[in-house]
Image (cartoon, rainbow, N blue to C red):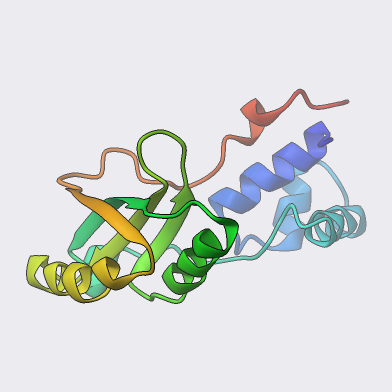
Length: 159
């Protein structure tokens, strides 16, 4: 369970992963060494799994974002695993989730433009193992893109 100091650290790091240890320590009211040890423990416990740069997809030429709802033929563990392995290897797929309901997977895809997405959908997604049905939902406007997890609301923090 996370304590209040852990929550402060995680919140600040999600906001700015390039913050110096000294600045982080100052903002949470710790000295440098204990702050570094706390961050290190969060990393060792795999709560912090890495640090990334957040890019503007449009400025790097990825103007189209699509969510693809996929239903597969077989629900055997081996078929699902084969599908997962193949979709994980696709560079244009930026996220994939196993979901409940009338579909089995939700895939998030980015592409340069509609033509390149159409090409990818027809030549790659439709050819994935066990695809029974797919539905593409095009993002018209990003209202609230993912930026960070709501740490404060994730659990009751201890002291």
